[in-house]
Image 1 (cartoon, helix red, strand yellow):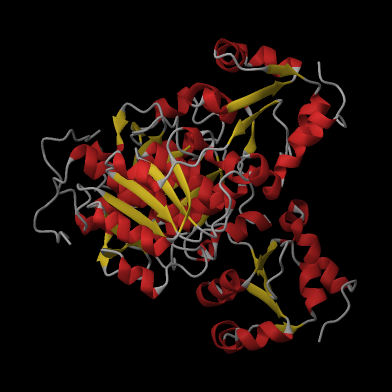
Image 2 (cartoon, one colour):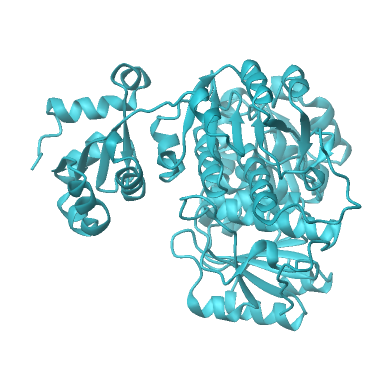
Length: 277
Length: 277
């Protein structure tokens, strides 16, 4: 039983709240039962250690602790105070895991011939990034691509807001946006900028072929150059006096429309405009 | 120029961060240029006072200050410290307004023969409520209905996350869920529960007629009784290993699908199941 919140081990885990320490060690922390369960289930090879309070070890015996032990992982029991001290959450949930980082390359993702991707260009808000990863997972995207100068995917707030989706699909990081758009085009994947000033409306765009949604920064969107480098600029139609949708809402809607087209086929009224650029 | 952050006036505004004070005075605070601008534009009769720093008064002269004065509103210049002291935001944006609360009745909303509504049952997270109000606005909903024991619509976090949408459409509050469902049915409005365990998939549901999305609590969803009291229980199809979408994402997708059906008509492949309950 780990009982000393000031021990070196606990302090070393706590230090992973700092980006520089995560970068140096190649590790980060997943807090709460949902995230830890998905890590143990979907990426046990990345789990370094699991820490749980006595109450949590009992509560999550079947869906976290036993599967973790069966996968040969170390499960440490610790006091409530120790588990709280290791994490960053305002309301500690009694279980966390240290996992090793994994950043697959764009080459690996493209080699698998993806049908649906999302590229986040200079996204700064952790909640937005986490929500888009979660939406991409739910809508069956093959990977999420994250640009240079976006928020760090392994930061505690991003990890929390992905609700475990972080372990469900490849997340490629540190990409330069413009050359990534060239790579996508060379791979036969259409790039669709999602932008409130788009010239095409979402329901009119053919989403049955391989494509990648490109989402810009929360405040300033995508630059004119980047919009021009995409194959189409698409807007979600706004029907009320609202000026726009936020980034996470727009991405969620675009990814839903993609999933709908891919799984049901594009069987809408043929008199509606289609886009085959 | 208001310069004393401890003056009675400033303290009285600051006190509006408390729910009990808002309830007693019937007033609340809108912070930041987007929210204040939308209040001045769309609900000037509700604006009691506008406060702005010198820099903000200059910066937002055309889109907030002049329109406010033209509408006969009081605009007070105040120091940065005073504006920061009045509000709740971590990063004060130099402009805020005190507005009077307005809670239209369900009768008023139904009298206008609404085509698209959303009913939030026991929603507790301010960000979720704000995002759903914003999505409802953007997707052309006629009103948002909020149940008893949901988070207070006038709390600073909700107001902020609506990004001004709060002033674009009626928001009815304090509703008992079950009798509201009866009222909707009597008015010929179908109630569609959005629930991950729904028996119908969103793309297969006919959304061209008048309907109301019913969203449950973040953690426990809708009770079996409430689901049974709705005309259909609808799920957004999940295509990846993600377990579910969060409340705001699900509501955004459902409202998008409604707007799409209402504005483009239901022109999909007739071999797909339709729901005319």
